[in-house]
Length: 159
Image (cartoon, rainbow, N blue to C red; front, side):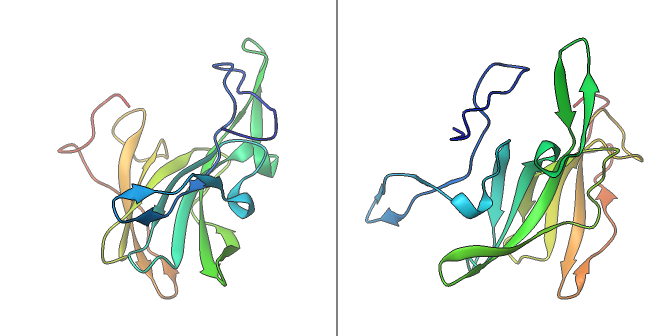
C-alpha cells in the first residue's frame, strides 16, 4: 500500500510499496515500509541475494517520468524497470537501473538464483515468443550479460 495517496487509474487501488518484516522464532515483526526504495508509484516485487546485501526490485516508469498517455483510459502508462540496490549500514543505497531497462518495453518481477549468478525476469522486449515472456541474464562482478529468452518450453504465445 502506497503512502503517497495516489491510486492506479487502471484498478482504482493504491500504488504498491515495498515493506520489510523480520522473522524471529516462527513469527514475523509488523511490516514496515522501506522508504529508501519506495517512490510515489508502483514499487515491487523484490528479490534479495542469499547474503542479504543486494536487492533487485521492479519500479514503475512513472517515477522516472517515462510513460505513454492512454487517452481512452485517461491514464499515464509507465514501462516497468528493474533496479538494483545495495545494503549499507541497514539502509538500501546506490539504487541503479539495470542496463537493459527501456522506454520501449517493460522488465519486471525479478527472481535471483540462490547462487546470485542468474536473474530471471518477465518482459515484453523484442525477441520474445508471447506477449510477455520469462527471460534470464547473467549477473557478474562487472555488470550483466545479455538477456536470453527461456524459449518455447517455458513461454507461451500469451502472458
